[in-house]
Image (tube, rainbow, N blue to C red; front, side, top):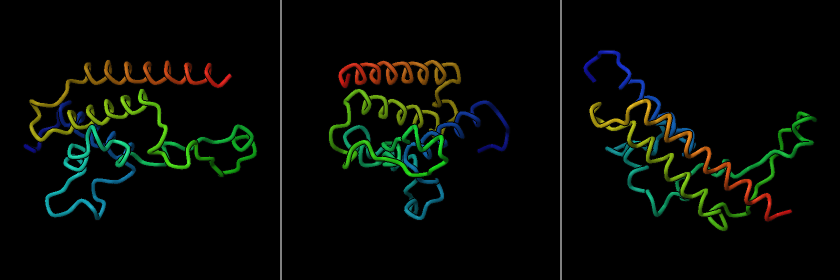
Length: 140
């Protein structure tokens, strides 16, 4: 806000970017008006309504054959992404949103430090990959 460039400004931008990517909306989206921001929108939804705000395209997967054929068609994992989504995946999504919120707080002093962000994101990634391995074992 003060015009000085700092790592805390970069963290703010990173937080907004996380929210943008996982919600699938830009901070300049028409829905964010009259005092509603991407930050407030996310904060109001968590944790109970995480599946209502997550970008539904996150639940699409490309068929391996399509990748090699340069076909852009995608297959949805679930007909309704709000149903049967692994609770561990929901926890991971909530954690990512919480990092985005922490990083995009108005006051720079309240923002999550870079090293903590890195550690938290890595832990979320590891938990997600672990849950994916368990799901694959169940399917086989």
